[in-house]
Image (cartoon, rainbow, N blue to C red):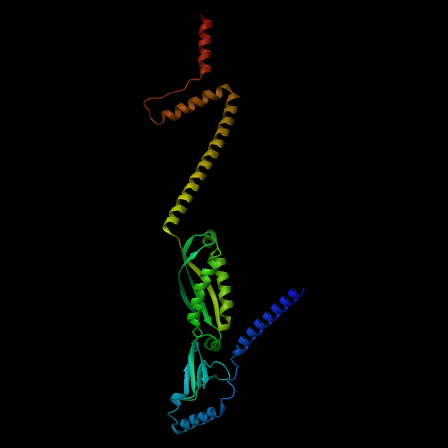
Length: 300
């Protein structure tokens, strides 16, 4: 009992630490960009005053260094003496920076697409396939994409390749070939959850192509051909069965009237004569021959 209690306490503290760590990461740079850089210290204020003095002395030429412009699809993340400036990303349009103490980085917030290189994946049923995909994503929070990750674009590309291998490794070959839409949805959800702390929104993932080894393609082609031949034989057998039943029904109908078979013979002769054959083989019923021979014997 004591061991179980201590184990539950350790699990509780571990989960609490994990929750606190996630909360700290989320609070480290808020999504609204309102994180203040804090006090810059005495040296910071001195440099800030000197920067204002330089701007005043070189006015209006200093405006060329102070006023910057970002496009409608861009945002600027500004750092002052290494600290994030209060207010988050700037733009679109004009914004003001302090020379010598401010630095900024432009972030493109348009949707970006890239091809995931073909990945050699071992499926659940031990088949090696080469799969490539395309990913569409955009930066939804410029501040987080700069402060929380070194290179958001490169990190997203590497994570997409890894996620593609991990997801396809849990699927059979038949599932990969037939369930591309569900696989794309699972990949999109996984990537979106993983890149959310980076300020990146994964909008769509599509599996482009699945390339199989040549030997496997031949084996699958042979299997498909054998399956088609088996289905053809079954269909032919079913047709013969239906035809035999139809002939049996026709024979029953003809047997009800002795003259019906004579009419059938005449129709067969008419069909054969229409083809202009030089030789005609006409079957003669044994019953008819026996009846003729019986009549001749009685006359004698």
